[in-house]
Image 1 (cartoon, rainbow, N blue to C red):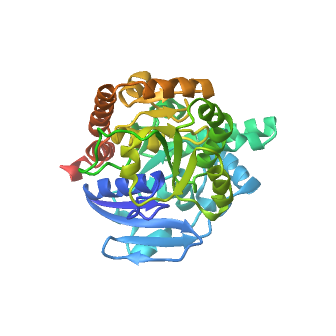
Image 2: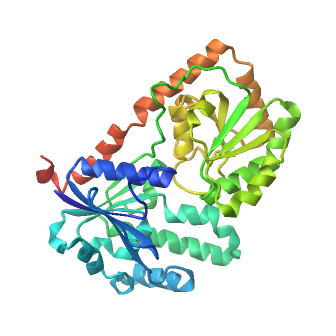
Image 3: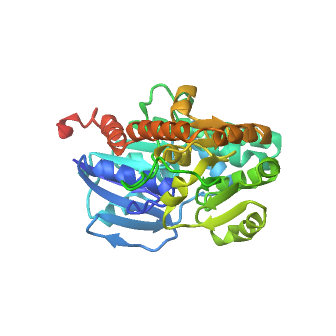
Length: 394
């Protein structure tokens, strides 16, 4: 079987949730058949990795931003024509020196890559939608518009994602709560995010040192928004009651965030560590982790990763989206809405006996280790493709 994989990320990289999911999809597809991978990156230089069959196609997408894109989406979703506004798909095939009929299917990461390349015109399209564009718009951008204009844009995004789904033979979503947002006629499977797995040397049972760990790249703007909110509205209450606690903030800091990071580091009890080589030592000694997201979409990779490392996570309801009450309990997810909630939960964790803490952390680790595996991820990918490609998979 030959598969064409289109992604905005270099699949050999795993830094950050988006990169990791793209890499996992790449590995899963390689277990099924021969995979040609195109990294679709606007304006970037070409590169080729013949050994891994990975190429980069730089281009400037048409109608990428602003009112032109809005009009384009509106007309496309009503008229059912989208082929007049894309990078010519022949460019994709030309890069590979092959013809349209050479592929059994095309798998695409992210709606925008499918839109840029008209991927459904190459071969049957399977889209890893991951997050719904409308959810991202509603939580991150809608507040920047006047109310009526924001509602119109939200309606347009929802109509657009439903239209895009109809172009697909199948769609993967990370958040099970969002399946009903897409047409019932479209095949949908839940493909959970995965986090980085601890090494064999990692000590699940380890004494904490009064630290709370927050992990996430700050190139992803919702992480910045979440930390800003937490330090302003929640952390002062915690410092007043538990002055011995330290919040370790870990994650890559792009230049645009460094001034804010210096401000965070000046707050009592806050350490901004940036990128670290050994995250396991910080997880081992953490009392708990923090899920402070208030905007974004999908499911939080770091909540899942915290469970894999056997640590309770104090999370906003938004950070725990996509997880029902039973799963939250098994993964050690404790919700908070305000400083008082957070302080009550911290008090509970600090007053546990060592035996209670060790048992709970090990149970969380064991559950996550069995529930969030690459084998499960791979099976969901194969299950999606096994219908129309059944003969090839046997």
